[in-house]
Length: 151
Image 1 (cartoon, rainbow, N blue to C red):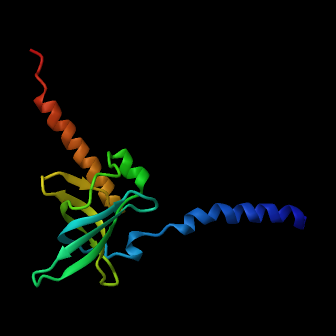
Image 2 (cartoon, rainbow, N blue to C red):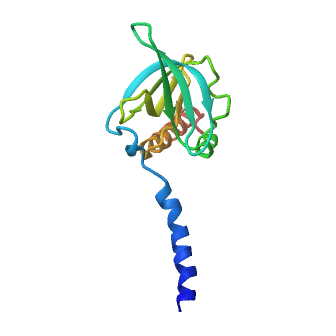
């Protein structure tokens, strides 16, 4: 009987690993707060488990702060049209998101606006996905308004 129980226990343990290995953004970020900063991209990594944007922010005093913003997984962002060169080094961005719990120069990004006005989303929380769905619905509604009506 014991020999039959071990495989079942092993399968149960293995099945629970993916569930326990993921964390909520709330474990690292203050999800009830939003900040916005402007900076220059130094590196963009479209990787799993979270895409990363490294950027420099120059304060009013002229000090340069090195920031990190984490976003969604590469697979999710790629489905939304992101590419490895979406944010090349040197791009100036205004980025909004949830600040780090530890007070460091990190955030879970929600919204990025490039100098040319291009808007990108890609944060980790369900709210970001809901925003994307609403944006897509609004685009479809606008496109339908522009289509000529049959007489």
